[in-house]
Image 1 (cartoon, rainbow, N blue to C red):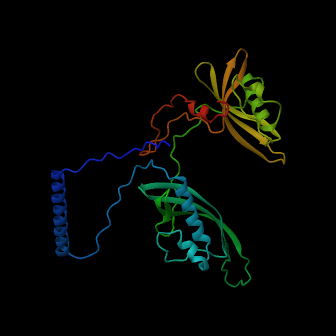
Image 2: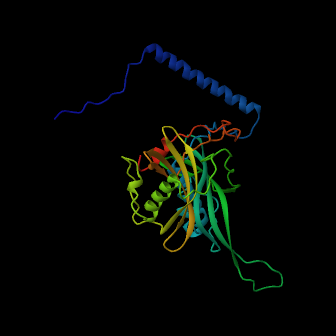
Image 3: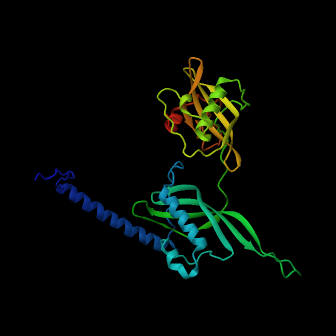
Length: 332
């Protein structure tokens, strides 16, 4: 049996000169530390101030396990009874002083992570939206038999999560109610051309409506609307009983391609009505249009806003990049 070849660390014997220099450096550090302690004692009492945390760039994201732990901590804080304090304490670095906010009059319907920042390695601040319903009995003087009412509300709760995604995470402190996250900055746009009601005689509108109706409402076969080599799987079962093209916006790309943003009106088998939006890339072949790409999330036509000013990075919309749309499209 042949033993596998192992990778070894690059090891070199220490040099005596380096050892001597290391010893001198260590003793110098000890001496400086002792001197610093004497200065601190002479200069006055008081606990040492915590070392400032150097934040990482704001573009750092919150990993899924961190968001999940934040949601778990917040939900437990709102729902775990005082009798199960051990279950709550297991989610924290140190057992919290309080026992949580569990109450028969407070029902948590949903917890969702809506914002987060990695402050430094192993430390995240996560904001969780808590949708809850509280049963409140109005205090009306002279009216003893007032019926309680259910009051729905949303609290935004920030919680500090520390640890390591692979080795374990926990809450550093108890959750805190904070103001909601900032609104999204202006400058985002999926199209800069106006939506218009489609002309039923327009071949492009006919292709868009025919393809979407076949794909989403079972009105025929979607394959004849596709360009050569494009394969978009059919939905089974189809979610809608009826689909109509309500509005569309088109933008000419290169090589005879058209980018279409389509707003469709759909009706479910039970009669519910709503609207959905889709992006399609159409390619002209002879006298007909064919669908070469299809996506629910569109490409951007305006650069994302600058993180510092909140304004678009460029004054004019750049050319549409359909690479992302192609990656999202099942038929790419």
